[in-house]
Image (tube, rainbow, N blue to C red; front, top):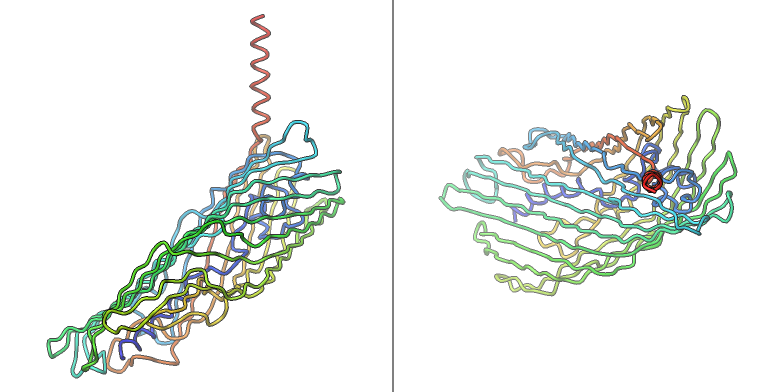
Length: 481
C-alpha cells in the first residue's frame, strides 16, 4: 500500500527523541552536579545518598540541601540531505525545570558513629511532544490517477517520570572507613503515542483516509538498594557502590491500537480498534557496580569514577490480551518489551581552590546508551514495542563556582549534555510529483543539546537552629525564676 510506504518514510522520527536507556544523565548534589558523576569515592555533599551512602559518615557538616533551582534548556537541530522535503521547523527548543534532589541528614542520640539521611530525587524525566504536518496538491500518491489534495500529520509523544524516595544509613567504626546503605522506593510512569493521519481528496471527488495509532502507558513501583564502602586516607579517598536490580512491588498499564483505512484502487477498507487497561506489568533494571577515587592537594582535588551496568536480557514488561480486527478478523496481541546492553561509563572532574571562600569546578563524563540497536518497529501494528529505543551516546560537560559563606554555600554553574546522530530517511512528506514516496538514500542529522543552569543552596541543618531556640527558652525560664 502506497500510504504504508509513506508511513515508513516518517515513522523513524520516533527514534529521535527517546533518551530512555542512559544511566548517567542526571547528577545530584550541588557540588557533585558540577563534577559530572565522578564522585563515587569522594562525594562531599548529600549527593552521597545516591553515589555512595558510606560517605555520609565522613562528611563533616550535617546539612539540609535543596538543589531544586536547576533550569534546563533542551534543543534539537535537524539537517536533512533533501531540505525541500522538510515541512516542520529546522530546530526546536524547550525551557523549564529539571529533576532535583531534596535531602537532609540527622543523628540519633547515643549512635554517635552512625549517620542517617532522607532523600527525594528525580531520577529520570522526559517529555517529548512533536508534530510533523504537511499539505500539498498534485500527483502526491502515485496509486491514484490524476492530482489530489493531500494532507498529513504525524504525532509523536513520549513521556516518563521516575522519582526515588530514600532512607540512608552509614556507620564509621573509625575515621578511616565507613559502610552505608540506601533503600530507595522507585515510582515510574511512562506513556508513548505514535499516531499518523493522512487524507486525500481526488479528482474523482473521493475522499481517501488513513489513520494509525499505537499507544501504551504504565505505572510501576519498586524497591532497590545502594550499598557503599568508603575509605579516607588523606589525601586520598576511594569507595565502591553496588546498586541492586529493582524488585517490583506493583505495576499496571494500558494499550490502545487504531487502524482505519478507506482503501485505494479497489483495495479493501480496514477498520481495527482495540483498547485494554489494567494490564499487569513488571520492570527490570540492571545490577551495577561503581568505583571512584579522589586526590586532594592544597590547590584543589581530582575526582575520577567508573561504573559498570550489567545487561538485561529481553523480557516482556506488559502484554495485551489477544484480540481480533473488526474488518479483517486477524488475530493480534501486543507486547511491550525491553532489552539492555551492558554499559561502562567513566567520569573525571577537578575542583580548583582559588581561596578559602571560592572554589571552581570542571568535569567530563560519558553516558553510553544501553538500548539494543535496531529495536524499533515500522509495522502498522506494533506487535513488539521496545520501551527503550535511543541508542546514541551522550557526552556530559560541567563547570561552575561555589561560594563558601558563613551561613550557607552558594553554587552557580552549568552542565551540557550533547549528542549527534543520523536517522535514515528524511523527516517530512513528499511535496511534488518528483519527490517519490520513499527515498532510501535520504537521512536527517540530529543534534541534541541540553544545558542546565544551577543555583544551589546548602544551609546548616536544623540542629543549629534547635540549639538556639533551646538556649532562648532556658534563658527566659531563668529570668522568670
